[in-house]
Image (cartoon, rainbow, N blue to C red; front, side, top):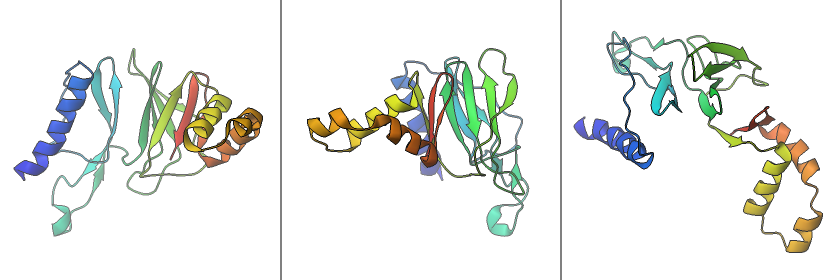
Length: 177
């Protein structure tokens, strides 16, 4: 058990040192640790939201899972805060998305995902348009000759990316994978 706890703590410490910032968020008022929570860097520290656990009876003994209030979604840091995408609660997968302002901690519902999703990842392309992301993907992932890259239809490829989990925002592009 000690080894299981040591590995995540070591990873977090290494991540913090790589950022040259070591911060501890205030303890949550929960008696037991949570899993499946959303996490992001906010104002130089690690911030978590949601999660779930088996607070009364362990899962192996038939305990009931409790959600705080949602878990198993994805989070991306954007210029003014963090976007929390999808996930699930005690009844179903969710399509709702939330924006949490880094300055005042306020929570604002934003445009939902096209369908309910849980257990996925997301990334954010800061300050890029969907067409710029398309160009980066083609250049990094496809071994095309220079002549093909010059005539590639990045605009059409960007339109196709919208059907593959890419969404353009006012500050950049979010990819759900």
